[in-house]
Amino acid sequence: MRRIAPFRVRRQRGSSLLETALLIVVVFTVVFWVFEMCWLMYTYSVLADAANEGVRYAIVHAGADSSGTTARVKTVAGASMHDVTAIAVTVTPPDGDYVPPHRVRVTVSYTYVPYLGQFISAPTMHADAEGAMVVK
Image (cartoon, rainbow, N blue to C red; front, side, top):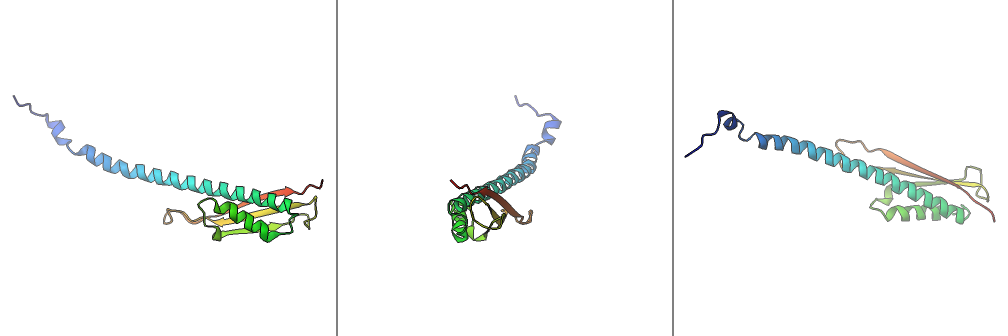
């Protein structure tokens, strides 16, 4: 014997397909934004680590070799998946010179290029690190 589906159930055929199609757009949007924010935080973490490594290099080499410090920062940042040509490194002595026990400041600037470029403007990120040279 054939069972007849109620009228209400016949009217709702295909509604789950429509709901899935609408929800999949929302889910993918959220996933891509989460990915973008994670990549932004990873980029900032790489810049901060590179600035810290630059300060270490400058302290060990008495800070006078700013080209070596810049090369060291770009080498550390290049180990990640970032374009090191867009990184600007500034090595400055806040106390006036590079003679120990004075301080060295390394500033790393990078213009972040988002994957979702049409939705996010490209922010410029700065990471600073400062260390003091110790005379022993």
